[in-house]
Length: 244
Image 1 (tube, rainbow, N blue to C red):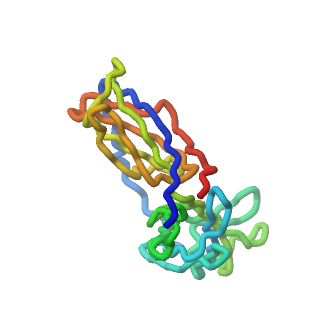
Image 2: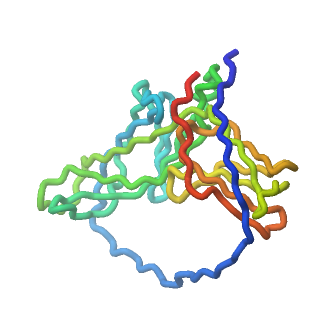
């Protein structure tokens, strides 16, 4: 059995009195877009790779969501995948070149791959979620006619989970804060995604295991009674060169 190798990162969060600010809500009513005569179609090609080693990731199940529909496929030995006959989004003119651009939801499942992986140091998250904007090109200059056969591409980077993040939550007087709720955020996607939560021990310490190598993170803390909150002063990028 291989021994789990991890890098521990110690981060201290100071919490302060919580201030609550009001926010306004946009009450404007969206305007329905005009209907189109023909919806152009295209093909999305992509690649799943390891962010750190740049190696392709085979066996990832990728699902593409658009307009209430879902297509699924699996990355091949080169980490490549493709989806055919996808709505190509909205027409745009970019520097005189007609293109179509659309927003799509990608779900990447590594559940089966992880289950088959015997080396604990070479596992990924079970799921990754991305909302991506893909631009399709292949129209001739000045041509705004809806056509088929357009092509767009996307690259998905993931990494192994060999990093452990440890730290301590303290109050304004630098005294440990027990029972604080600590949340770990993935800052590589927008908006940021909460990955994990934990509560601090009696000495204010916290720990997150199996965090992605090279990930950019943010950590927030909220006191048990909700009167104090804080975060790291900046986003922090974890070491990428963690090896087995």
